[in-house]
Length: 264
Image (cartoon, rainbow, N blue to C red; front, side, top):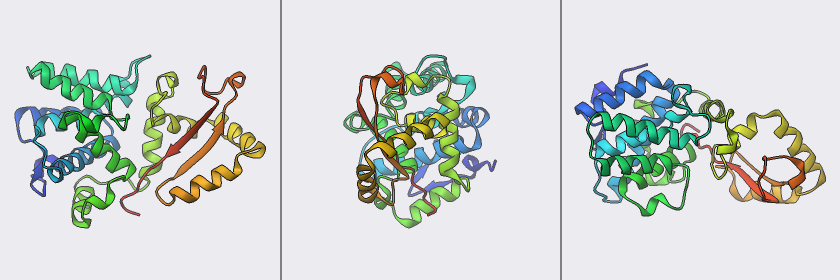
């Protein structure tokens, strides 16, 4: 991996924190995560910090960096519990790491919350900037929701500094799947659920049966409304007795994947 963080990358004045804590975070995540997740997390930091700059928010770059870099570490086997959401695993790992550097407990709480809520849209944006900007970075890098709010030059600079893999969409789905397949019951209300279902062969059979039976019109409608940014969106009718989705009480759910490729 190119040692990008030591090259002094600066994008619109945003840099990786050059401090004892900042360097320690980089070294720890680089040694723990895959290159795919390390680069993704680095882009999340830059896109989040740039969003903070645009919104004229005041925030600690060190705390945002900690939240961004640790946000997916719960997908790694070394930091994945048997029964907690991967977001909580990541938040706990960040908390333990920051405690070892004597970071103020109130600041640790901000980082913990930013990581724990990074797959829960609609809430973090109303909270502390570190929390709001963590999900902002995630939503930009994976979903492209604020694509037009960044100039071509800025987007290119971030992706050049921390490259995407040639097949990022497929690779990130695989990473999500590998990180949660042993505890899918923890993914309710989690955007990563779809990654598991996509990789599950049973899912293909369920979808085929449902589409044959009904809802083809809805499927076509949703795809037409949301293209081209939606990669997959499927309307599913779930019967409680089917056993699908374990013990969920919902009769209907909508599963979506909005994976945005900045190189498209």
